[in-house]
Image (tube, rainbow, N blue to C red; front, side, top):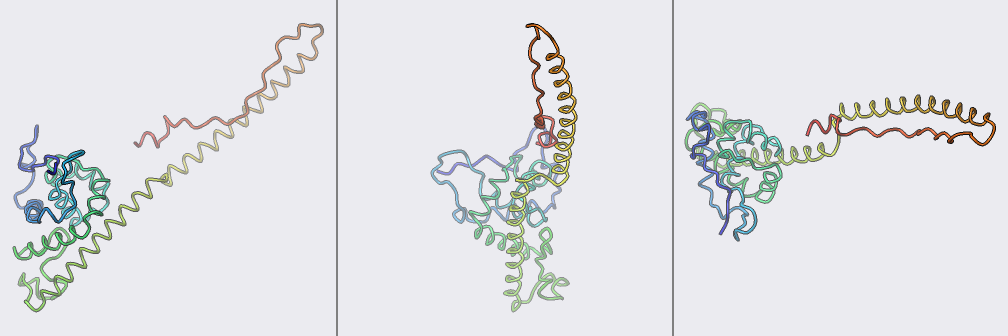
Length: 259
């Protein structure tokens, strides 16, 4: 039997009940109800119940649809939204899927998410909604007069579906691009930080060169003085100066502070 993380948006959350913070006409309520209608068998889940509990596909589907429809695409941005955006936090019942989980769910259920997304948009049109987030569902792009009547003639319904499918495909592509960019950017320093690290390294090298020159002169002076001494008691031979450049202390680096 499948095991899912408990996430009931209608369960009061302490010390705050998020239901009191979300307007009754907020789109998040519609998206949650629409996602619940999608058959569970359409999604890839761990049916054995082994391992860690997984997030429910209906919640993950609602999370993707709500965020993509509102222009939030990168999985890292969606993860942050589960903490910062009240509607998203309510949708997830104050649980917080990480960006890897969000990205993996979309990739493993790409077709199911796309098909479910279309059904949600078609349901919205049946309910006379003009938009779901930023997506027009009243046929405006198909028929210039459709927005006035909030309906599309039967002979144009096929064109509307094609238009919505194209819109969804564009959103899904944008989500994938955003995730790839986030992954690549995570492997390199931001330009400003990279420049700062380079300047710090150059400063350390200059300081090391000045110090080495000073210590070298002092070392040679001690060697000369030692050589002038007569007898057996010339003292301990002076230690040569260390001319290596010190490494940057990462504990005080702005990179570590950013984590």
